[in-house]
Image: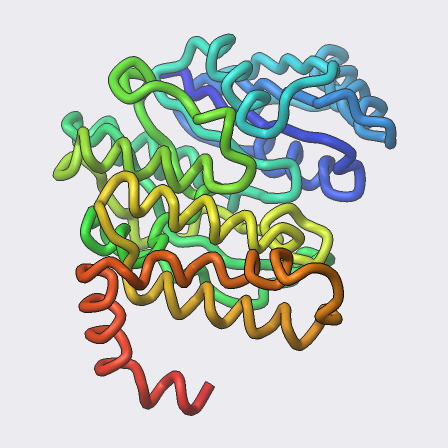
Length: 302
């Protein structure tokens, strides 16, 4: 079995070696195809890629699986989703995954997934638990992963991207990532897979990966974009926005008001309250009411 892993990267030299190391040291009864799509980095990323390539070709680094094919390209692209899609188009494996260049796999992650997919042939997507880490790679908290349910996914993102693997047939059935999305291309992908394959998505209660969260990383630095894209996707796919998403949006809006001076036009201020548009939807209001009734005590303590 060939497992294809795609890593999109751009100016992530501070973390790239950790990511590469975590992939290339995976052991097990599979062939590993590893493709790194660099977006034309201007830091030391290319030097790091060349060093790992040299170690593999020279024999200084040996495979711990049945064999490794390592390829990388460095050229300008149209963003993260475009980079991942380029990697998908080049990949030849029967199982795919993608790992951003500041995230890592735990030892044995790929082997665990291969065993699951070989013993459960109906599973088209498998994901596991993950930890958040800080800039130094220290674990900070558990990602709130849960067994898959499309309804739960409509209420909260229960799938951690680096801990996901899927069969190649998924791409032919639901398509690749939407290159028009800047931040929520993975969330949109999970929804499309869930709509097509719910009942064939397995959750493994093992820790497979880490997701690095720090002030400069993409998800943290464009939180408003994350919420805007995610809520628009929820409205598109489900017809309403879940209450938990609304509360999360309001929380980040409040944080913005605390941290960013309220200067500029009224339009800019109102833009931060984009989530208000979804409150005219009856299903959204009902979901928000249900969430507040069951979580008010927690919210008050928070």
